[in-house]
Image 1 (tube, rainbow, N blue to C red):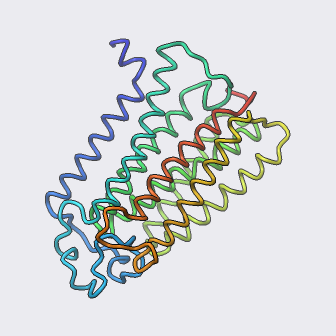
Image 2: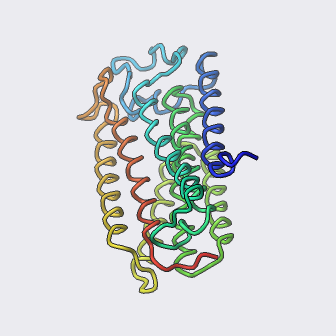
Length: 287
């Protein structure tokens, strides 16, 4: 096996996986995005604004022919997630190839398991959302919601492992369990996906509070800065997300600048900031 591939295997597999998923998106777009229109578009109450026919959404051509990308801006702003995730995967290979050691030894920096997992789901956040915004189909909404759950489930799983010094495999088991539960719930009841996501968000916040109250977990000053910058980016993203709903104050269906697209870019930045925060933890177990 060539040394370049051996050193950057995670990055190269990320590129290949992303290319396959993007190819599927292009094929689905070329055949006209089969399936039932998403309920958010039928109601025109919250379908993230772009290209919504606000006068009569039931007669919009998107119901039959969304084209290749129903919401182009909201689709392609997801490139931010892909770029951030691929950079994380590349970073793993760069440290391996150069022999560079991270300044802090912890579960993220001392091995490749959690770093690869984090980079992998960050990459998938992009096409997961693209499926939905490109198609506006009901089935595609599941991929959009699950891509966010892949990220959010990591936070409590990782926090519990580092707080209680559990083995790495326990974190993977917790993570997998949360993802499976969320996936099943969203398949059974797609209309309440935001409720399920919010519950997982509360679990993630509680886990972060548990970590913050622990005297055994220390984070470098740079990590604390990254954490609060990430929180600020996410709060700003959430405000813009809310104001950009269809008929919202920031909604302009035909503008090349879409508030929901800004939400994607700021959220990608927040995910990246959280990764830098995790890397700055000092002196945790690494087994």
